[in-house]
Image (cartoon, rainbow, N blue to C red; front, top):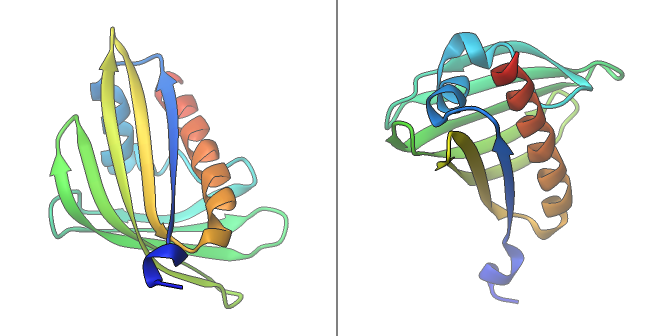
Length: 149
């Protein structure tokens, strides 16, 4: 099987009833990033972000039930303020999981004062697509709660 057949992608969309500037800020402002997490079952432990091309982002979260720590990190490859973020994505846990590098594109589209967020996550192992989609749905729910609070 050619290597390209072993790579999968997922696309997740959500419309948030807030302007692009607010939703983009929730993704790029460190104080907002500290408020949202990767779903209701997790708590943010640490967040770092340098939102510029070549800048890094890191986040540590903890599973509230199991205590497992998850570490996410990457490097920004493109930053178009108010429109698009592109970064690498790497996930590891303190229990030996390591999903290897992948890529995420986050687009912010204006819809009459609301914002459609489109997340395209590529370079995934095929068996990770379903879980990745579910994770991004939870992230968008968290971002929406943060923006609308």
